[in-house]
Amino acid sequence: MNCYETVFILTPVLSDDQAKEAVHKFESDIQSFGGKIRHSERWGLKKLAYPIQKKTTGFYYLIEFEGEGTIINDLEISFKRDERVMRFLTIKMDEDHQAYAEKRRAKIAEGKANTKVEIN
Image 1: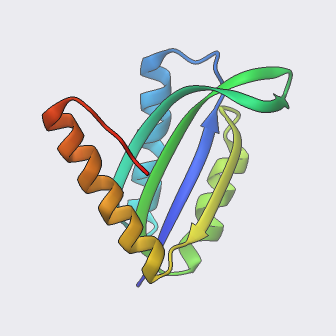
Image 2 (image 1 turned 180 degrees about the vertical axis):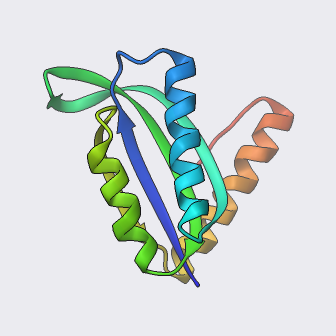
């Protein structure tokens, strides 16, 4: 099985509950397509580099998962059909990327324990 990372931006007009529901939908889609969620993060409301659909901000989310290559096509169709998603990007993680993601998650977990996070 391959490891993948997908980042997507949800429209900022959603409430917090609606955004969580959308993320839960995509996580359950990945699992229904035969994938396994490794990690999920909410990056929060961020300013966009350029307007998308006349919006200048969006809710960013990251999901790391394992699965076969056929999952990507099905997942991206789900993103395209959902009006809440403004942009998305899915990439295959190589060994170096996976090692970096592990270190990053460890620092975040350590930071939550110390309430200070610094990622270089």
